[in-house]
Length: 158
Image 1 (cartoon, rainbow, N blue to C red):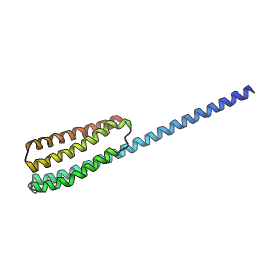
Image 2: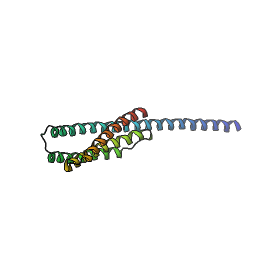
Image 3: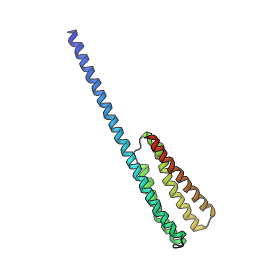
Image 4: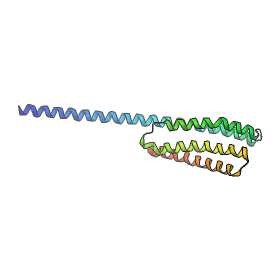
């Protein structure tokens, strides 16, 4: 009787160990899938932001070439601000795994700083206030630094 009970305990213990291992493996697969999904969404936002930036810079190039006057450029900026905000909103809505928290913060900040740069540039065009232009330049530099930091942080997180 004792031998049968010992055998039963060993069998149940073995089953518990196997189930624990299977559960752990499933957890690892789910976590890997979540990380991959996050990285894909992160990369898509980066791609979309780069495309929007290129489009905006082309518009700004027209202003620099005197093809646009200030009021036209102000109207252009007014069209782009909501598009940048949409990218900020998409980035903020990501379900961010803990290992990507730093990269996520830099991504949101980079996009938001670029949007703020454009807002300050708009204010400069309206008022001619050099401080607005300087703040626009500062925010653009901050955006570029945050973008580089986001890239480094996503690579470091794996």
